[in-house]
Image (cartoon, rainbow, N blue to C red):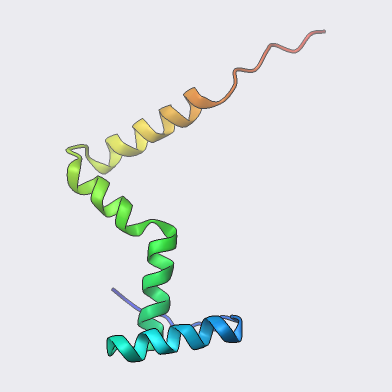
Length: 80
């Protein structure tokens, strides 16, 4: 996977904790930040669901789209 350098502003306490965790794990600071972002964004959950599903990507997107539309309240026709 390609990596891209970026600048992020974080609280000093958060940065210190990330650096300590990285040092204890023998990893780079950026690895810890990426792992935290992936966990926060649910990448592991998405991968787990995909592994258990036999739907193609197209079928999964269609199903998700249908469910989003089904969950929205129905609009009433505008009165004139």
